Amino acid sequence: MSGQHDKTSVAAISILASGGMAAAKFVVGIAIGSLALISEALHSSIDLVATIITWAVVRVSDKPADDEHHYGHGKLESISALGVTALLYVLAGGILVESYSRLREGTPPPTISAVPFVVLVLDIAVNLWRARALHRAARETHSQALAADALHFASDVMGSFAVIIGLILAALGFWWGDAAAAAAVAVMIAALGLRMAGSTVQTLVDRAPEGAQEKASAAICSVPGVIDVERLRVRMVGATTFIDSIVKVPRTYPIDRVESIKRNAEAAVIKAFGDADLSFTAVPVARDNETVRDRIMVIARNSGLAIHHVTVHDLGPAQNSGTRLIVSIDLEVDAHMPLEAAHDIANTLERNIKEEFGEDVEVDVHIEPLEPELPFGVDATPERVQTIAAALAEYADGSEIHDIHNVRVRNTDAGEIVNFHCRATPSMSVIKVHDHVDAIERALRRAFPSVKRVISHAEPPRA
Image (cartoon, rainbow, N blue to C red; front, side):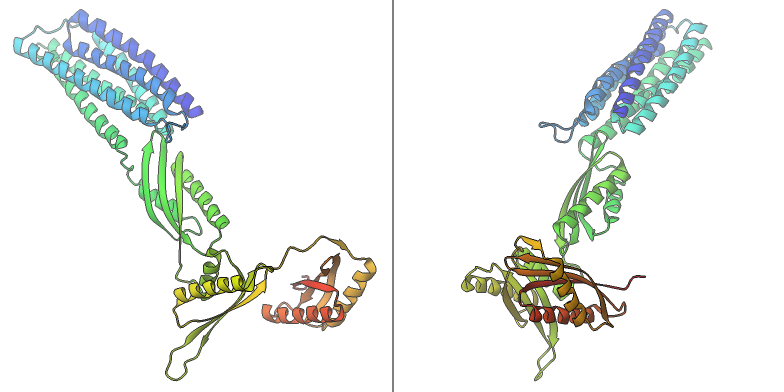
């Protein structure tokens, strides 16, 4: 809200200054008969109208988006700037016509005194202050309306200098000096209008700001997980930069990881642009470094299937044939599903894998019941826990697998559930650790048939 307050306060102060200086120049211009000074007064009057419009527009343009204006109200500033441009051209045309008429008819020069020079010098000082204040506020708030107003007052300075030159020429006896100065003011107004119109029209037709596309693309690509930006469109609506992007992400990423990438991309473009609104469409694509296992997991996930123990290997050539890919998978299905339905699911999975890797791939799917949620249980007695812990310690070999600890036993309707931690040699590979621990689990279940499941956690020795 501070930006909104800055814009409205600067615009309100500018209204008072415009009104005062326009009235002073108009009164003095009429009194001495100077067309150039009257033209400057009329120019300042247009500035006054423009400033009032700006003051009204900036109070509305910063309103947030609503049900009818999905991109906010920022373009009201561009529309107001276009309207002011039209007023400038009308004024410039009128001044040129009057200047030509005076030059043709040889109108007497104005009465020269110190008063118009004092007014013009004061006008230059006021306009320089206003142009600087408005330009600073426009840069900080990205307001096109304030930027147009700042350009007005900067041009007023040049116009005032032209009037001073015209009055000096008239004082030196060049009767045409005042009319020529008025024509110069009209040309400056027309040039200003042309510059404003070009900038405003470009905004209204959604031309991307120069360098914005490259800047936005670089910000998005800096986010870890983004492979590339497939398409990106940028447009300005008031002070807000709207960015529509289609971004490539790895297809192996889960949804929550993609959502995290989106949030990080939004933060990156806001850091780059300040006031920015990003539309992020993620397109999952295959990476060059995807393994066969990665591709199979994607196939299963896209079908909503739970698989594990994916084993992949190449079968060597035989009888002049090439190598053949061998895939084995454990597929989990509802334990109460009829075999026929489960077999259809397995066949569909096999068919999808063949479509991905070719018909010569050999696929075997092992169907097993989906592990149900464990039933409600209660902690076993301390004596039972001690008995299980002693058995686990006995089955461990004491060298590579040792320090059986944190043993927990729960009684459930399905049987006993045992959890334990153990320590292993740090240099041992995961597969060897798994084999050793698996042997301990099997021995425990053989010795205690009531144990339904054993869950172990191997860790390195304490430092």
